[in-house]
Amino acid sequence: MNAMIRTFAVLLITLACAAPAFSAAAQPPAQEPQEQFRPVTELPPQEQYPVLPLLVGAYVFVVVVLFVYLFSLARRLAVVQREVERLDADLKRTSRA
Amino acid sequence: MFARAVWLILRKDLTVEVRSGEIAYTTLFFAVSCILMFSFALVREGRGPEDGAAGLLWIAIVFAGTLALGRTFERERQSETLRALLMAPAARPAVYVGKLLGIVALLAGVEIVLVPLVALLFQARGMLDHPFWLAAILVSGTIGFASVGTLFAAMLIRARSRDVLLPVLLYPVIVPVMIAGVRGTAALLQPAVDTAILQFWLALTVTFDVVFVTLALWTFEPVMTD
Amino acid sequence: MPKWFMPAAAVCGVMFAVSPLIIANAPYEATMGLVQKIFYYHMPSAWMFLTAAIVCGVASVRFLATGNLRSDRTAWAAAELAVLFGLLTLVTGPLWARKSWGVWWVWDARVTSTLVGWMIAWAYLILRRYGGPGSEKLAAGLALFGAANVPFIYISVNYWRTIHPPTTVVPTLVVDMGFPLMWCVATFLLLFIVLMKLRVRIEEQRARLDAIHLALDA
Image 1 (cartoon, rainbow over the protein chains, first blue to last red):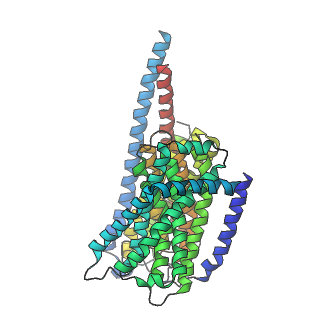
Image 2 (image 1 turned 135 degrees about the vertical axis):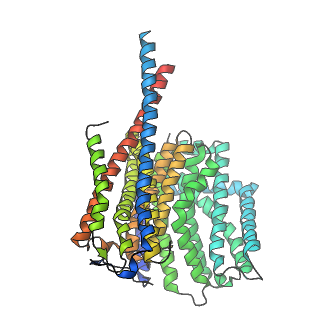
Image 3 (image 1 turned 90 degrees about the vertical axis):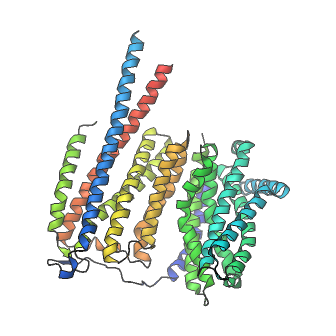
């Protein structure tokens, strides 16, 4: 255990030595990411149409996948549950016999 | 005590390798054939893909390394030597470090052959102009790969489908190390080498090495105990 | 199933049904317009993916340290949910990106490391399914590396040249956008808990099945 802690300490020190080189080579962003979402109430006119399949597709995808998974879980649980009950009944029968 | 156990295990592996050469030669041959296949497939009119050399070098190292890992631990499994090692009074982490250094040594030997070959076939002579930087990137990247690979290969010794499972488990985890290694090597191929970028990728690789080796040291013991 | 399960599932269902209405009422974003609304499902999915990876890692540590089988079942369930929510994140993200960045995919730090984390979760499931006996401990070892990937995913977007919005976006949201987001996060979190409970239950029943088989054979 002590050897582990010692090893860890050595490795941590190595990491600390690596850190300055890390921060020294900061990269300037190629394209500025958005720092904040700014709300508006009116959509600019050119924004409306091509987006709809993407938007609807995203939401439909999420809902469908979640439903499929939920359904799969419920079915798996039912199968195992049925098997457990069947064997439970068998066990009770054989222990009574 | 720890260092002595590591040295003994490393020496055992190196001795077996020097005597039989089985894993070293087959790994080397496989790595070279990988590079040759890439060359056949991708070189047109004597020119390879732009900046392709770095990526192809690392792919060959990873594929060859995966084979070597599989073979090394298969040999341990067949002779039941791993169980003997784990029963020996050496600390478990020492067994891990010993095996790790053995794999790194093997891959270093493979890389010494691969680098000039890649430089030649893919017009990447720039790689050879800064040997110390290249060595640093290759060593730290190889340690990153081998640290996780040794742990997973040892873990999988008794598992079913272990040959297929090793790459399945290993490759996602080492992707960050590979990216850093490839980017660092690619930085060396630029006409004007930017040392800041080089240092950045090297530092990132070293960070991954530290994290991976630490995690592997923690995990090796509980995972190898039955 | 415990008493809280059915009410929780019902509440979750209702919250999901209501969420599109709440999202529709949120204001549009100035530069991204309508497509930005994918954000309200994309972010909670991403957060649940990271949560699942962390839960899997922590449960795996407990399992390796104590051998507690319940921790192992939790870890397996969490890995499956990580694959699920990771899938949702990695599909809704590109659908949004296609409009706002002009490309389906970029190989930047956050997107790549999210993909890697997702693949680690997949690898966990493959290992549990095909690794044979003893694969619980091996999978736990793998899960540790997956969990170590999580902080990297989260902070990468703040330090690397990347086109993905940084983490400053969420704290600086106006209330009209913050409320739908929090609603969806709460919905997804409730869903996460419900799904975890269901999945762990399956494993518990399977363990019971094994115990009964053993008793019958004895």
